[in-house]
Amino acid sequence: MFDRLKQRLDLYAPRTLSRSGPEAGVLIALTDNPAGPEVILTRRAGHLNTHSGEIAFPGGKRDDTDPDLLYTALREAEEEVDLKPTDVNVIGPLGAVLSKHKLQVTPYVGIIPYDVVLTPNLDELDRIHRVPLSFFLEKPPHHTDAIPFRGKTHYVPAYMYEGDIIWGLTAYMLVELLNVGFDAEIPIKNRPEYS
Image 1: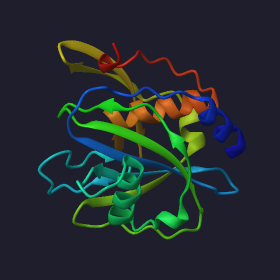
Image 2 (image 1 turned 60 degrees about the horizontal axis):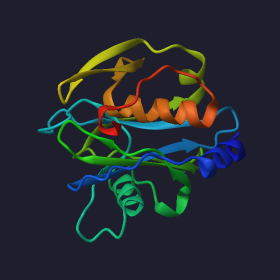
Image 3 (image 1 turned 90 degrees about the horizontal axis):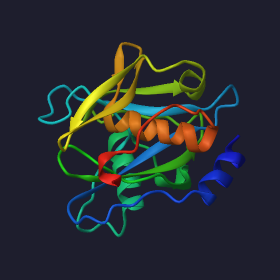
């Protein structure tokens, strides 16, 4: 399964954004669990000023000292869930997206050992989810969100897992992974920043 994913991402030309401004890198970590890969997701701590309680991939804003966005994604994953960069086999990037706060976010897909111990940084997170990849491939989205963005309405599938909603940019990046890497054929329109 991961060999096919790597081949597809090697051939994939992810969209990039030409805008200048703040950037972020996130890690879409998939475990190599023999019973079936899992997707690592986090729930942002409730006391945070922005995105509190939201489901996200490990990652964050690029520091001035970060050499590139992959470094940012790996550094932030280590800070948030104690995932060592040496435990990540990076497969490649997906398309950059623009957040409602005008942050350019680039996701990187990586494979991690299924038995790696992940510990949430409670200053930033409430919880870590290990969601079976099959959950997203075999079940339709819970609902579709209508999200106003830059004067247009954008429709994004949303998922419910253990009482948490996976929506917005996280859901969009997840659907791109499912469609490109696993032929999920989940309908989704191009994001406004791509037009």
